Length: 56
Image 1 (cartoon, rainbow, N blue to C red):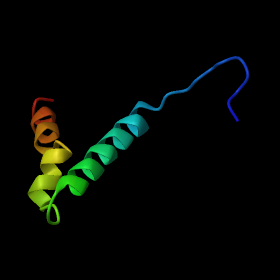
Image 2 (cartoon, one colour; image 1 turned 180 degrees about the horizontal axis):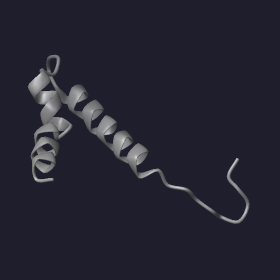
Image 3 (cartoon, rainbow, N blue to C red; image 1 turned 135 degrees about the vertical axis):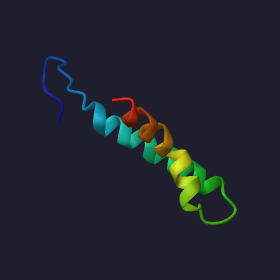
Image 4 (cartoon, one colour; image 1 turned 45 degrees about the vertical axis):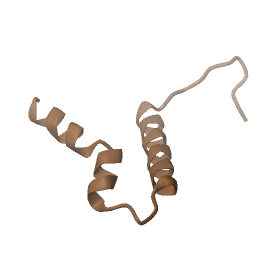
């Protein structure tokens, strides 16, 4: 049950994970075969995260 008064709490990490899960599900449903590890990394933008981590 939502709290009275309209107070909402947003967990930005959880929302990002849900978005990535959705993108992965869409990619898997559109693929003719199982997604390769490289395809999964591309959908999840793993290389972008690694590149951003190197900048820190």
